[in-house]
Length: 431
Ligand SMILES: [Zn+2]
Ligand SMILES: [Zn+2]
Image (tube, rainbow, N blue to C red):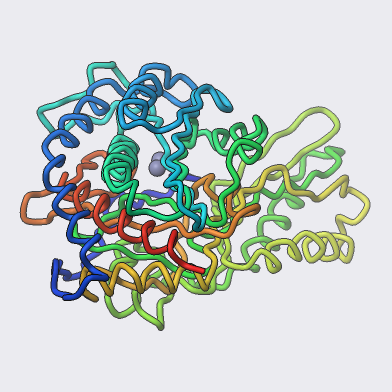
C-alpha cells in the first residue's frame, strides 16, 4: 500500500464491531475447513516467530534478498515447486494437487519502507530507519502460512495454487517487473487474490466490488513566462479548485470519518463514494521561458478525471491567458485496485458461510490517498483485494498503515490464514 500524498490520515480508526464464529456449520462440506482451522492453530506460534523475524530484518523495496531467500527455503521445505528472482526478488511457489480444478493465485507483497517513527513493539527493527510500517511482514507470513496449510491438504485439493511473493510494492514497481519478467508465462491463474491489513478490528475481513482506492493523476499546466505576473497561475489554480465536488467544510476531510458507521466506508450512503478532490499543495516551477503549475487530482471516476484535461484547456483558451498557454497534460497517474464484482461477492460469501457472517463486512466507499500495485495483475486476471482487520483497540494496536504508531494484533495472521485458505479451497473447486 503506497501513500500517495501528504494528507495525514494517521488518526483514521475504523470502528466496527465484529466477532468470529468458528465451526458453526455442520456437515462434510465443512470437514476440510475444520482441518484448515486445526492446522492453522498448530502452526500459529511458528508463524508469529516468522513474522517477528521479518519485522526485525526489514528490507527496502527492490532489496529484499534475505526475505526472498527465507521464502524460497520455506516453500521448498513444503514440497512446492519454487521459482526465484522473478522481476527482482520475486518468488513463486506452485502447489499442484494433481487433480483437475481451477488455478488460483494468491499474491503477497514483501517489502518494508524508510521511516524514523519510533517502534512500539519489543521486536524492533534491527535496521536503522527501515521498518515494516505497512504490514507486509504480516502479509508475507500469512502467504507462507497458507502455503503450509494448503500443502498439508494437497491430496484433498483440486487444481493448482500459485503463491506470488512480490517485491517493491511501495515504489509501485514490483508487480510490473514480475509481469514484465514473464510471471504469466510461468503461471496461468484463472483468478488472483491478495490482502492488505487495515484498521478494522482483528477478525473482520472486507472487500468492495470495483474501485477500492481512488484514481490519482498529476496535472501540469504550463504557460509562457513572459512577465512577472502570477495572475495566470492563480487563474489555473482557481479552475482546478472549481472542479472539486466536496465542500471545504465537509466531513469528508476528517479521515477518521472513513470508519464512521453512518458516513464512512461501510455505509451504503458513504460520503466516500463519488468525489473529485484537488490537493492544494500545488507545485510551481519556473525557468526563463516557462512557468508551470502541478497538482494531484484524486477521484473515484477515471472518466471524470480524464475529461478534466479538456475542461481546463478550454477554460484557459477562453480566457485572457489564451496566448500564454503552452500545454496541459498529465505527468503521472496511478491505476487503482479494481475488484471483479462477481468474484468479490462469491469469495466473501465463502468466508461468511464458513466463518460466520460477522467475519465479513461489505465496503461501499472508496479509500482516498492510498493505492496498491495489485492493480497491475487485475488488468490481466480477474481478482479481489481484501482488507483484513488487524487492530485491537483494547491492546492499543491500531493497524493504520504508514502511521507512526502502526501495530497489528498478530491474531490477524490466524484469521488471515484460515479465511483465505478456506476461500482458496472453495475457489479451486468452483466451476
Ligand atoms: Zn505501504
Ligand atoms: Zn502496503
